[in-house]
Length: 492
Image (cartoon, rainbow, N blue to C red; front, side, top):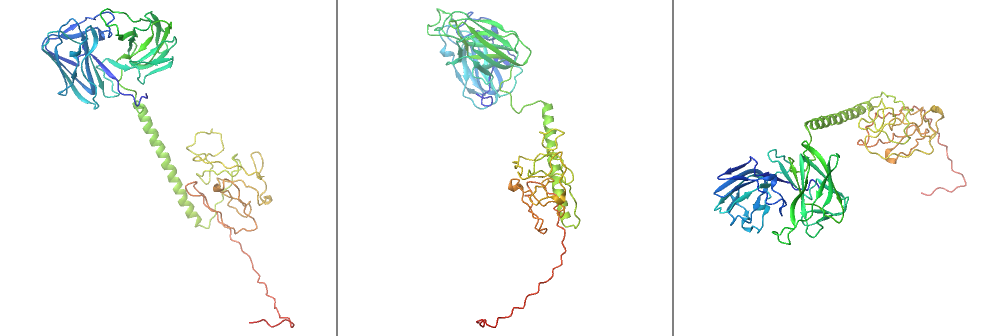
């Protein structure tokens, strides 16, 4: 399950938490109900108890909520308990008590809520011939928030923060089980301490096995994995649920990585994970868009700078086009010398930024400072060089202009022909023709100027005009054609 699809985690609020308001006759008990209770240990080692008319309330922002305690087989008839959320009754379970001592037993709860909102849980206890034990409240808060007043977080075995890279691990009804030595789990957590809870099966070996855990690559700590412990007070069909396999030492609050490895041997008790309890952690996956203030400011400044560059390019582009249109109406012709030092291949269209300077694209970052090849402003397929090209290359002097052949591919300046059309080879490059040269014969100096590429492809420099040509035309005298005397008269 991805972090974006993962539901928010549940928070565990211990009975001793000051956010719970108790009214009436309440006491604190440290009874554990056995070193290895069938349903696991008491949370944080104590519970609130009452035998009279009492109540407690708890305010939270979230959805689902439930109350857990101990079902005591020797306490007699269970008290009457009524639970409401925002005044609406929710289901209670005290009447379904079991015939043995079971910790972490549900007293009441709501598990179908979908709306996250401010809510108030009220629990009213009356007619209490027996003791009611309250261990903790479990609720689902608004995703992604950090509850600083609530010190524990319930993390399910399928949570986004848990990986099982080596195994094989097997999925069971309550969690994941590793039986092969070397099975490894990696947990990313944000908090101070982690407790690992799992199930102990009576149909697996009860021999003690070994495991290790390490935090942030530090020295591994070994722990024992105890097998199922038969208890005559528990039905033979019951496994031992929610047992604590180990609890890490405390670390500074923050982001950490926990690595757990099953050491075996393979014929001994397996390593099972039902859930984790993380002390002082956030309730959901880190938001992808979250960042610190410095990153936000940097992003905003960078975005504004980029927008400014784009507007500057557009400004100069349209300014060039306007200037080009003005110059085309003027009889003055501006010469533009070719760049014979460029190592770009002939026929490759170049971007145009300035008619007098050969600059690299300001948005391209893939070339070094000493590169002389102008790069396109956008992805553009480069045409192949003309195999008949005999023009100048780097390290060679340019050929004399008066020796140029009509089909010779001339050196180009930013994809434009030479403005001096009489003394320089006549050729042009059409980007739409994939870079193939189209020769212009020198015998026809009045041949129309080739069409420019579309405006959205390149910003065009001023187009040179051909020089006017003066010529004297001598009329040819028509011969006086006389009819041969022997020829017949032409018919009408």
